Length: 139
Image (cartoon, rainbow, N blue to C red; front, side, top):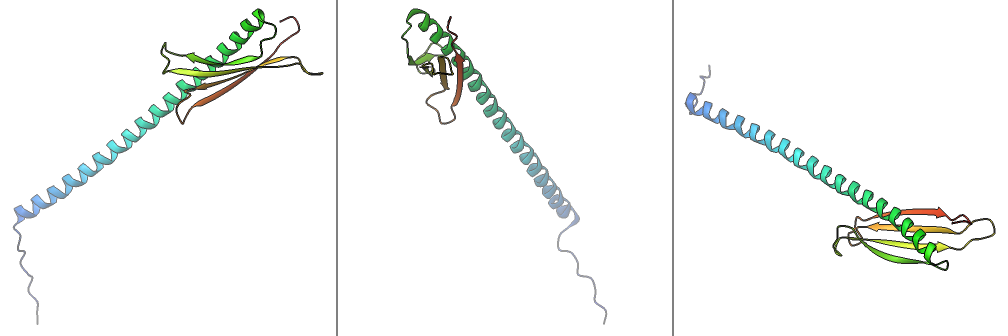
């Protein structure tokens, strides 16, 4: 007994439309995946540039703290340090926190300025930069 082929219930036009729809859905999926990867890459780049800007700002604050400590020591020989909320962009909400300490001289080490700058102080991903400068007897 020979089996006869079963006739297809769908016409050729309907089958072509189904294949076209499947191809367009696959293309849409590919475009969506590429767009998602692009957005993820842009967000990572944005976070990295914000982090770099915060590191740079903290470095400048630390340098300013060293300059401030040197100026204070020139005015007052018994200056021991301070915590300085340094305004960055002119507003108090965008300020860094600079801690200045003067360590007294020991037998082998001269007196030194220690500065720690934190920027931004209120966020969980803040940056801490530490600078030290030894004071010579004539400074």
